[in-house]
Image (tube, rainbow, N blue to C red; front, side, top):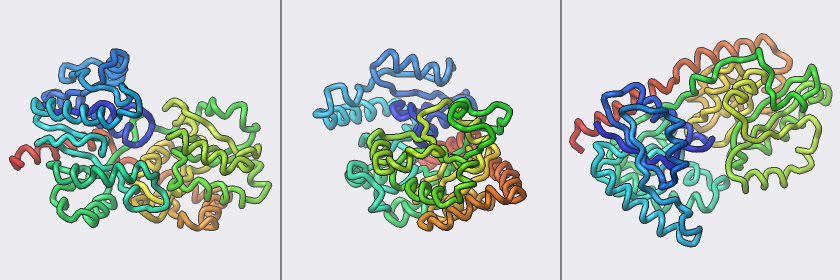
Length: 385
């Protein structure tokens, strides 16, 4: 089998990028009898970076055939997207399967394409999507969903959302969960380097990891933290490891400028995976009361690192976390605050969550994700669709 991917969606720190990288890496390792082709931009440095990410394998080919989206400047991006879609469609003729892991980018119209849809929040959360994202979804989703042979989603929650919105695609939808990488494991032997100069000796911290999108509910995290008694805030800091779009970061920082200037609130930028593992491993608890997710990958990452999880009782979070997390109403600041107090004052409950988290995280592995995905590929080919 010859399987192609658009490699433009595998660099970065968001869930889609992580999913694309880990899926491809494990497909290459688990199925050496199949050929995997990454469609890359013309840049030599880009091709070199891809080789560094995946190593040298007989069953991996990198083809520099795609123009950069900004090759002609932002004014001509639609033209570039059209050219890219035509190139991908042409390249797909040599593939048994074309897997689009970053949806709503190009309309390939390929006869053998499979798409992964991680979430649908631009269509389902009116108050928490950007206009650009909504326009992109609206203009592409019907075309893409009806033109693909299978649609992979990470949770039953997302599958149900998708089928409710587009009943015609129900038979195409396949649930394939995500996972945390093997590097995510408890490491309390080495304190986080990023916090050495920022946390007084003897203090600990609550941790948030992710973007500053409004749906991530950061404003309520701040309000809940401020509700802690002063003595508890003095001993338990709040650490926000923020990633994602610069405009969302700047909006969040400007909106909460006074709060973020408090000495017991720390904002970090990008860190290595090794440092992220240390941050998870040493935290009092991981705060993830998001309003909507497709999977919520940081939940599993935190659990693998022995970090108790406080997450939402809505969207897909209960499905992913199971009984191994404290589930809160993400719209209720008092609910979030109560869970934080519990993690400070109830060490027995905290230890129980850590053990349950280890057990829950074992349900998810990238090896399993790769094998389930290969099952989707084979199902499409066997059906002759």
